[in-house]
Image (cartoon, rainbow, N blue to C red; front, side, top):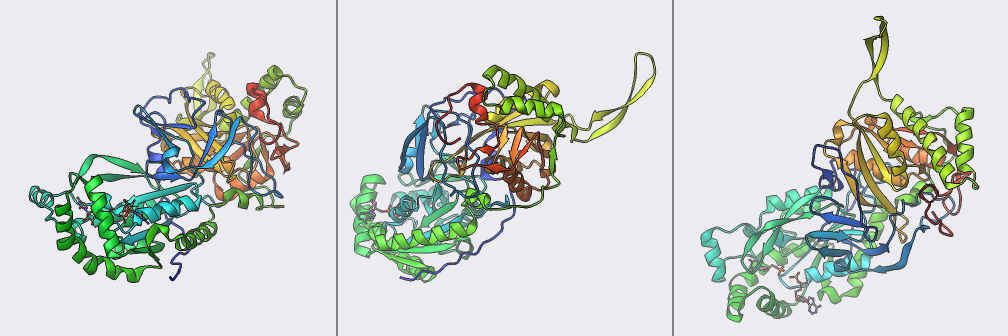
Length: 569
Ligand SMILES: Nc1ncnc2c1ncn2[C@@H]1O[C@H](COP(=O)(O)OP(=O)(O)O)[C@@H](O)[C@H]1O
Ligand SMILES: O=c1ccn([C@@H]2O[C@H](COP(=O)(O)O)[C@@H](O)[C@H]2O)c(=O)[nH]1
């Protein structure tokens, strides 16, 4: 067995990401109020709710919650990235099989795991690691792929099968197929151009529509399946290594080498029980086409393999080696985001993109109210609202204004200013950012509001995207992204990445927050230097429980009157 890495840290071109397209609100009016069943993390389907996932995208872990708690985002430089939240999270967190992560109800699909970061600390999209799994029919390719997924414990893995790319048959070819006389094991049976297109897009983190193949009817279903970029993509198929173009897209090549008699036995069983065939038909196809094609086209491609896995899925040593290698590669690609953010940018000067409200006695006075632990909830809301209003007004003042002249009731001309663009959109990071929506609606007529729900994964410590709803044409808007507090900046970074993935120019975004930790400002400014950051106070630290220090406490709990938990945000 040989292991070699064909992976380098590659920087890819930036495209609208997978997470983007399908989540947009495709109506032209304002986004409607959001109602999420608090027992569910995310609800996808019927065009209303959406999350970057697909039936073949396999979140490795399941985390249950019955709360829409705002994501915990603070962390400390001295503490490892693994974080917990103070929300009413069901403490059960188990490795789930793919099916357990997906609940289907009526025509809705509910995903119980969110999307972890798909970019690095510099905010740049990170290429997924692509594993190609090749081998004869029924050699155990799918089984090996599934074992890799189970052992990887990586939150987001996409499994793509070459079978999806069988060409659409002509009538004549279809008749041949029914007589077991069409050669499905020849390279010409596959639409390689479409395969390359799909795999390339997935590698760029973009959303794709993948054909669904029906082995019983030898045809494509009318529906397609939506797949999204992932941290790891596994591509499996009998001719996975045949095309040089496909080979170039694979970071690791695994060949499953199983005895021909075992393959035939498995194939007989499977094709008769699952693919609507009979014994003589399977044997005829095997002897005339499957077997010769294996010898001519599949076996020779074993030479491309980095790892040859004898016996398939039962070969635990080989699967362990593959998994170890993938983990190393993911670490190199920077998927452990929060961990890195925590230890970056210490003792650096504040960036120019930071716009701190002048610390006037009025601002200090408002902070004194909301920071005081003894402030009652109604007073907390009252003074927070005043402060939010000031922050929002300040943020708006940073957008371009143009000179305009009006006539006063006295008939005298007055030279004033008018905002350069009427296209302004507020996007709140749920839950705490929602408290800022009213202020922006009060001061901006016709404003549109988008929402992004991000929560922290208790196992990985990483933020995960669960829900987003944005105006379809958000790219044409100036956007004020709102969150009440920013600590490490990991959640705000994810929200910013989502906006950029929706083609909103960086310079058109302002991140507005009541309170920010210095470390969060650095993280965001480094990754997105053109995003302007507006806050009414800057605090120097985050403590071991990930609160900003001196801080404000859990803003969401204090504002919404929910019970604070005993430990972390
Ligand atoms: N190690 C194994 N032992 C017994 N049966 C297996 C093993 N690996 C796979 N199979 C069975 O063989 C059939 C083909 O396996 P699969 O992984 O789908 O192969 P492929 O993807 O290469 O066609 C399936 O029915 C599967 O359950
Ligand atoms: O319509 C079809 C399409 C494919 N086949 C056979 O399937 C295998 C590939 O699937 P595996 O899951 O990799 O075994 C290939 O050998 C084709 O012969 C088919 O019979 N009919």
